[in-house]
Image (tube, rainbow, N blue to C red):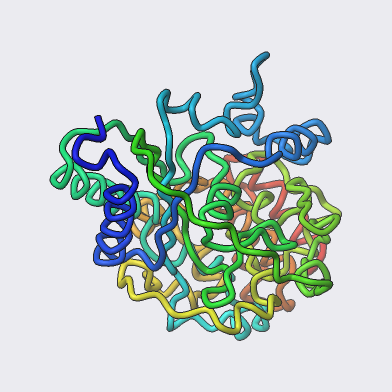
Amino acid sequence: MFGMHDDGKDRAGLKNDIRRWGLELGFDAVGFSGIGLDGAEDGLNAWLTAGCHGEMDYMAAHVTAAGNRRARPQDLLPGTHSIITVRMNYRPAAADSGAALADRDRAYISRYALGRDYHKLLRARLQKLADRISREIGGFSYRVFTDSAPVMEVALARQSGLGWRGRHTLLLDREAGSYFFLGEIFTDLPLPPDAPVTDHCGTCAACIDACPTQAIVAPYRLDARLCVSYLTIELKGSIPEALRPLLGNRIYGCDDCQLACPWNGFAPLTGESDFAPRHGLDEAKLVELFGWEENDFEQRLAGSPIRRIGFERWLRNIAVALGNAPRSEETIKALRSRAAHPSALVREHVEWALRGLE
């Protein structure tokens, strides 16, 4: 199936072409790896056994008698020989994280979620890259992934030379920091792999110390059950009361470990206009967002990753943030307006917030 690219010289040439095409399509880096994951499966299984995935049952859904499919690319696409991994920066220019976190009347939303949903953008761009390869060599077997299937993205990106796994568990690069999305193309093309890069975290513990809920329980080990991103995005039920004060004004995700990381001092701004903040979300007041009705939520967040949590959890999260905000008549009035909300989940968090303010 590899046809005209069946010798080593042509494989290396095609690899260089793919990297160039990827950069032309707007990716900030393109790397190549084989399908071996160097012990990642053992680490993943130990993490699952410890229950660190919380209610994210999909993380454990691919464990079979033969092993964990997340760590076995050939199980996702039989015949896979190589994996093309891409990186795309998302750090927006207009969003001042420090100012947003310092103002407890404002809502803090993780920087990656301020703009358009990255899933659609990356998937479309990866498909264009696959189509470009097809025009060059003819048909080949491939599958595109954008955080949409059981893929160990960080492990694959590390093996493709795009960075190392930081102590906060995110991928890090000396020039790009960690403010980027990852995507993959699994393919049957036998492309030469890139060399992994070495770890450059050293003894730095800035990310561990900065985590507001101490969810980084050890270097390179995150307990999702404590993570603000998990609590505000993945958790469907009540946020544990002991953790609510620690969320501050973070209503969707958390960037604290990234903000503290010295390598992010070098992180470039994104060139993608779709990742720029929408609807003033980088400066929005909590009271303003809490006043949205469900129709406002659906319309204004159309095309946003935030929409996936639904209106009920949106109100739950903001209620907690309002409970952590400075006491004011405006804040109390906003909370009281939702005290009889039809959702028991919303009412519970509103009542908690009011108890702390009244």
